[in-house]
Length: 297
Image (tube, rainbow, N blue to C red):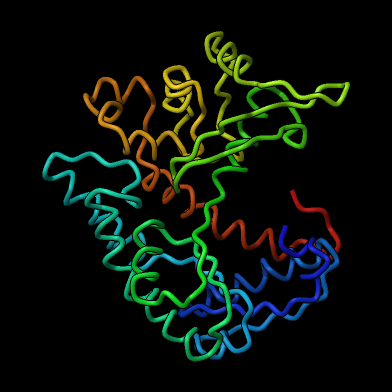
C-alpha cells in the first residue's frame, strides 16, 4: 500500500473531484487507509484542480469522463445496433476510440495546469484507453513526465496463486508486454529449500482437471478466466488482462454466440454497474465504521 512506504507516511494527499459527495467519500476512504497503517500525513480536499496541484510531486489521475450513463451505455448500444459485440470497450475498437475522444481533452487540460503549477511532477495515469491517452499527452506535452499504470499484473498473480492454493507472497514472476496484454514470461513458486519452480505445469493440469479457474476473487462480477486458460494452452504463457478484455482483442472468442456462451464471456460494464449500484452505499457505511488502527482486508 502507498502509505506503507516510510517516505510517504507523512505525505500530503490533495484530493480533487468535481462531485462534492464523491470527494467526501474519497476523503473517508483515504483517511481510513492511512489510519490502518499508522500514517500521519495531511489530507486536503479541493474542487479546484490548480489549487490541488500546488506543489505536487505526483499527480494520480483516475476518472471516467461521461460516466456509465450516458456515455458507456451509448458506446455499447450503438456498436451492438451495427452488429459489433463488445465486452469492455475501453481499450480499442469503436468503444475505446469514443472513450479516448471524450477523455483526451480533459487530460490535456490537466497537463496545461501541471505545466503552470507543478511542471516537475510525474503523472501516474490510471485512465483508459491507456495507450491512446498516454500517446495523446506525449504528442502535445512531451515535457510532462507521465506513466500509464494498470493493476492487472499483481492482481492476476494473486488469482493464479489462489487457483493453486498458494500464498501469493511465494510467487515470483517476470512479465513483459503492452498495457492490457502482457504475459508472464516466467511464473514460479518458492519451494521449501528456497529454490523456485515454474507453476505453468500445475496451472495446465488444474485447468485440465477442472480445478481451475476457481470462482471469482473478491466477488468480482466479471467472467471466469476460461479465455485466459485457453490462451495459456495455445501459447504457453498466461496473459495479465481479464478474459473479457482479451476476448475483445482477438477475432475468435466473442463470436459466434454459442462460443461466447460456452466460455462464459460477459459484458464487464453491465455486471460491474449492477454490483456497484447495490454495493457502493453499503461500502461507504463500512468505511465510516472502521476504527483507527483496525486491520483492513
